[in-house]
Image (cartoon, rainbow, N blue to C red; front, top):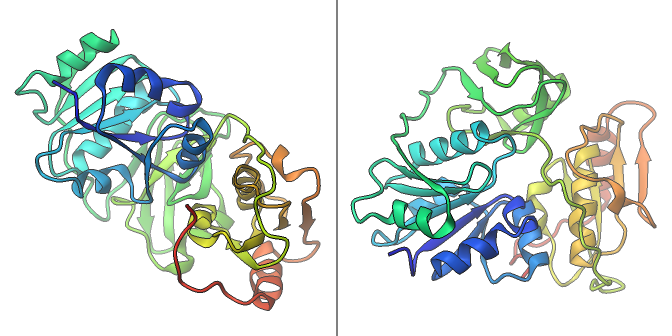
Length: 331
């Protein structure tokens, strides 16, 4: 029976839509682990008891005890394609069978022989979903093309490792490595500045990279009362909004964010955390990955008139702020 299982909740939608309550009532999990920065924000706003993990879902699964059944919970953006594709990727990178509850298509997938004791069918029965059994193909070899499925044509942002590297022109965006870093094969128009930011720390193995498309959250943040101290540390988030939870703590009194979409995401999360309005440095190349309204009402957002936000924000402004000590994360 599914009772006592561990659920790995992916993405904010499973909390924003109430999927987590439905699935928990049906399966009675022993614990729920949240994978993803914006999922953490949605989980904290929901008040649902969870553990938080910064690793991708496949690595969360790899670190579970061998006897623990892994239940992946997701709500894909474009059912059924994106939800099933997400489960296939996670299962292909996991070291054990994976049970995958896909709320967008009302399906419970048993990946890679996940059903000897009949758990997939039992969970599907309890939820009123269909049970489907599949085998995930192996991971794309290094140096090969990478397909990002479930895109919405017409300019939807496409991410690699949290950086917008282009905009979708078809339902499947295909990229490949080359001597310049990445090239578009089909279904995507690359964004040169995004590629530059992605490769800032060296080459990227796209066979192992985290790839997605679309907004990072469709629902607005719940604005909390101020919880930050009147004075303390300033956190600098430079084109890496995924780092915000590791950079802020109870002594953080404000945030300087560098980058258009980084500023939007930081404004969203800081509103939830009760950190005062932020100071954002932008250059006008926003991709609208999250609602920007949380940046209003006191935040100072400046747009550089020459050059890029990298130079003005990362080099000139951020360099004047003492770095945070390498200590714990926000609770």
